[in-house]
Image 1 (cartoon, rainbow over the protein chains, first blue to last red):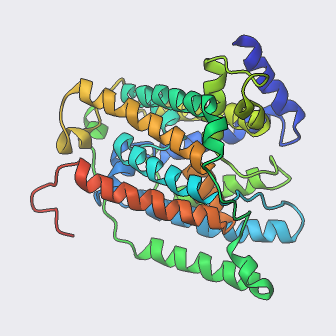
Image 2: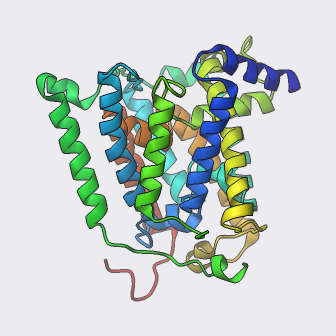
Length: 198
Length: 172
């Protein structure tokens, strides 16, 4: 296992997507922002889907709104390039459904459950272990699963349908998200555990 | 230091990080997490790239996200110890106790199943909420939008059946 871990760092150092330190730094800040905004909490993620808390949708909408505009500008100025995931329709829909069930039961997503473990949550650690087994099972049965994932509709971006008005589409998309995030009511689940322990 | 930042500060901070990661100043790629989870699983269970096609397929992006997840863990640890001071061992979330039950065994079994579904589902869909909703949505990717609709729709429906309704707050 040790050589696989060394190999992992080695692969990152060689692949030209930032140095190992840059990648660790990105992860560190990502984890810090998730924890500091309390996105890792069950009450925030599961609470969002049972209408007890609106932090997650408001924060996610703000992020996507600002990022979509920023990404567009970065790509246009040549400082970035789009990297879009393809639509493998059957896999995408089935996967999203399984993911949605897992998300509301565990109350964290695959990045937040690591952050949750770092806060001392044993249930999140068990979730990570379940995830590890999930990843391994997927790897084992990939040859069979692969045939069921299609049809491949390609790496489509919405503004491809509006060739000459891409910026306008991005602006409208971003504005709608920002306004929605602002207008959503503040529903906050105040977790007594946050106030008693400290 | 405050114990929590408001949603809009979190949103701005997150998008600044995304700009950095996405641009050539940073890593020149969007952030994702579930490929990293699958990659770490192959490391843990010794499923090497020579024998398993999927390990070979995610060799590059999985390694990147694997390292990113290690950084993420320490980012969370740093904040929970020094800033929010919320680090403590806990077994069951408060809202779960309110809506579901107080049994540690039940929470652990469901956590395991849910963790399994999360990563298996994310791999089947080709990404999780970080890759599909945050990074995908920010690139106006059709795959991200389809994923968001189905994942969140299923989540809301499952939530209604899975958790008990609270008196007085169930009609909204």
